[in-house]
Length: 483
Image (cartoon, one colour):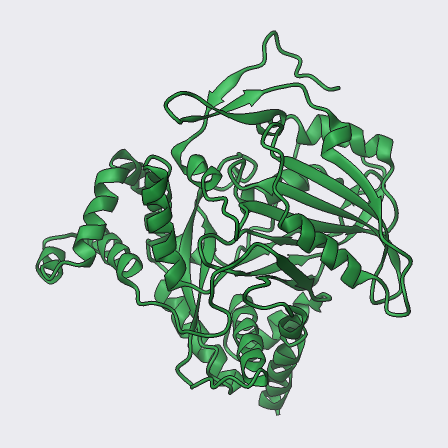
C-alpha cells in the first residue's frame, strides 16, 4: 500500500469542465483515454513500480477517487493506493505465423468497453507479455486506461512522457526537466491569436456568453449585431455561431448510435521525414498530408463497401486543440477546445483532396472555435445532466468522428530499462459518435489508430490498411512533380 506523505488525505472540488467529462459516460461510449505502449523487452518491474511512485503518483488525481456531495457536486478524495489493483499482469496466447497483434487489438477493444471501478481512482495499467508483432518480434505491451475527467489527452501525454528516461540507465527518480511533446504541434497555428486575456475574459461570463451564442445562432439580426463589434469580438462571435449552427454531417455508414462493443486497429509507422518531403513537394504541411490520407482512406473504404460517394461527400471530425500555455502540458484537468474539421472524403484525386484539406485548414487558422467549445464544456458541467445530454447529442449529430493528432518526441525513450518501440492512443467519443481516429508521431515514425463501435463498423482494419496506400499515392505524385 502506498499513502501520501501528508498529515491528512485532502479533498478538492472538481471543476465544471472536468465534471462535464465525468458525466458523459454512456452505454455506448465510456469516457476513457486508452493508450498502448510497446516495449522492446520486458520492463524491470521493481524499477517500473518505483517510477510509478515517484513520477506518476505524485499527481494527486491518480491517488484520488471521485465522490459526490448532497448537491451533486463532484470532488477528488485522496486515498491510499493499492498498486497491485491498478497494475494488472497478463499474457497473450502463443502467436501464429503472422503474430498475435489482432489478439492484442481485441484485448484493447474489450478494455475500451469495460468501465473503470468508481470506488477507486479512475485509472488502470495492464502489462501484457508475449506480444508478437507482424515483424515477428516479441515485445511487452502496456495498455493504459484513464478516465477523461482526470485530464485531457495532451496533459496525459505529458504525464506519461514524464515517466520516461532518455537512456536505459535512467535513475527512475523524478526528473528535473520532464520530457514534453515536440513544440511543432500541427494544430498550434489554429490558436496563435489566443491570449491569456482573451481566455480570462471568456471564463468570466461563460454561462451568459454561451447562452447568447445559442440565441444568436437562430437570430436573423446577426448581420446588424456583427457590424457593432470589433475585430476580435466579431470573429469570436462569428466562430461561435458557426459552431452552434453548423449543418448535420453527411450520412454515411460511419454514422449511427453506438452500442458499446468496440473494435480497435492501428497501423505500422510511416516515416515522418518522408511525409515532410511529400508535403513540401506538393505545397502542404505535414498535417495537410496526414489529413488528406485519412480522408482518402475513409473515402476508399466507403466506395469498396459499395456505397455511393459523391464528390461533395464530407465527414466532420471534432479535433481537440490544446489551450494550455507552453510549459503547462503536465498540469492535469481538461483545458482544450474542439475544432470541427470537415474532411473531403468524396474527392478521389489525391492532389485535389490535399489542396482542399489545406484550404480548409487555412480557414480555421486564427479562429476561436476551440475556445467556444471549451466554454460550452464549462457550461455543461454546471447544467442538469438531461440538458447536458441534449447539447451533447446536438454536437454528435454534427460530426462522425473524433480525431486527435499529437506530435511526440523524435528520439527514443526508455522506461524501467526498456526501450519504447511504439505508442498509440485513442480519445473517447461522446454521444452518438462511434469513430475515433488517432495520429501520433514518435522517434521518426507516424502511426494511425482507429476505434469503431460494433454498431457502426466491425472492421477498422479495412480502413487502417488504406492509410499507407493513400500516402503512397502522394509520394508517387511528389516524385513525378520533381520530373
